[in-house]
Amino acid sequence: MSTLLDISALQMRFQGLTALDSVSFTLEQGSITSLIGPNGAGKTTLFNCVTGMYTPTDGRVSFDGADITGQAAHLVSRHGIARTFQNLALFGGLSVLENLLVGAYRQGSSGLLQGAFLTPRARAEQREAVAAATEVLEFLGMPETAHLMPGEMSYGRQKQVEFARALMQKARLVLLDEPMAGMSAPEKSAMTALIKRVQDKFGMSFLIVEHDIPVIMDISDKIVVLDFGRKIAEGTPAEVQSNEAVIAAYLGTAHD
Image (cartoon, rainbow, N blue to C red; front, side, top):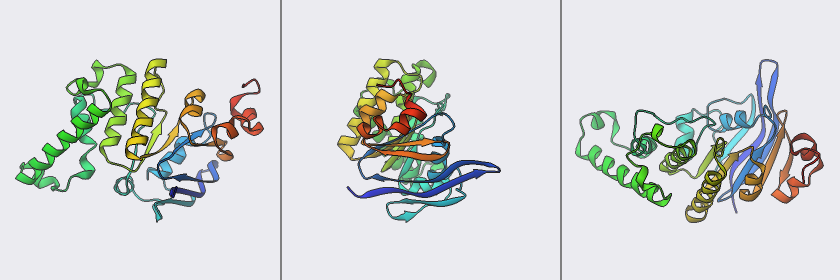
């Protein structure tokens, strides 16, 4: 597999605090790589550096061979990178279908003026976006949610809607920030199955931050472990699970 994302000696300092300290790793095309570590280890900071929300103090972020270090978020998105957030970021006043259509904005080319006057080109793009959103909901097994409002759904179901919206961006890499947070066991199983289905069908790549260790061990091709902003381990789930530094820092000495 070829390297899709290359994180090289990434550093992020906030005044006297070093949130990331020379972190390096790669993510291969079509793979699932997970970031784990205690709270404050630098996982979300790394996400923010990759997606253009932060400009790193030093180091380099490369995507498919292109240097995207410090690019604005909307430019990073155009390269083919999408993300979800720890907390729900759905539009409460829009239906599920309408929330997904927001995710299609990067694909449109008709422009603001044409969209405002609903030119034939804008109407055609709108029809295509609705068809794509409907197809995504069908693929994820939730077509009945299209016209529901987010507030009418369970928290876990709303998380799946966020995932669906990220898929609407037709990204090659999706960053999932705690996708299982607040979910019941059945909802976690459903979300895990969705991620694997998308990986298998579309060859999509994922970078995941998640605290549920059994889920991470089940879903990941590779795991990167951060502690106090430094990478302390990297490897397969089996390798990480048996790493003494990881056990001491995160998994706990009683971990089996």
